[in-house]
Length: 273
Ligand SMILES: C[S@@+](CC[C@H](N)C(=O)[O-])C[C@H]1O[C@@H](n2cnc3c(N)ncnc32)[C@H](O)[C@@H]1O
Image 1 (cartoon, rainbow, N blue to C red):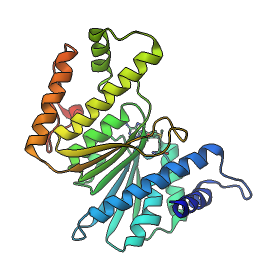
Image 2: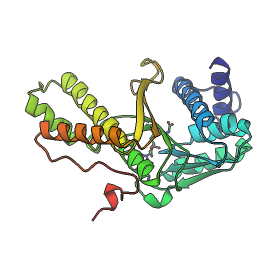
Image 3: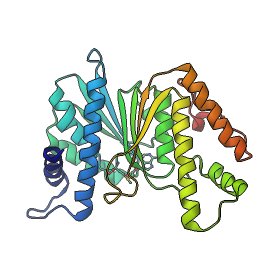
Image 4: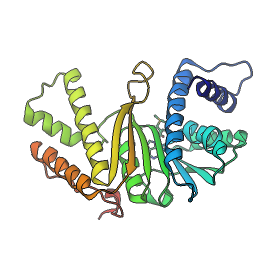
């Protein structure tokens, strides 16, 4: 991990810090810790993947594509199998920076940086081997889950970021807070809302056929948004049924109708008419 962190810092500096003599800022050093930890996870997922098929990694809500680019260089490129990376980001300036960084990377595996919204199903490849989303902000985490499910992704590593109004389960969490009489003090409410959003995302992934683990990827001193969802598609019917029932119980407790759980092959919610 220490060696990987030093490598990540070196590459972040080479790819993204243009001025000679300039150093990585404090936030870049924290980002390096997150990326190094995520690359350990990518390496583990790669080790579990079949060598018979090409390995496609999607870096969703990629920003400047630190995770995707460095996964290409430091993990996939060293493994020797047929692999590629697709970074999806909607903000044009960040896509331009990713492309410039990719040109400097001299990656042993192809890297493509596309400008698109992760909610646009057309930008997702079919059945990617692994989707990573590091700090997909607000509702972007829900769109990543939906895109990963709809594209038939075999695995997902998701580190959500802030929770705001655009988050799928925010309304459900609010309704549940009211029903249960959770005090309106912001510090108390915020924790409750976050917990319900985390629970709903976990059950939603399980209902769609994924086995999930939720762990602290890095210390909370690196980032308060430090939870990592490891999801691996197993498609176990019993597990999926239990998760659907749990989603229904959550919705019933909030006095709302349960949203239908996504299943592999279903149209994602934004494409339903
Ligand atoms: C907090 S940044 C994280 C970027 C990068 N993954 C990282 O860890 O450095 C979130 C990024 O997601 C992008 N984003 C948010 N919603 C998106 C969406 N619906 N589709 C594509 N990108 C999105 C933002 O433009 C931003 O670059």
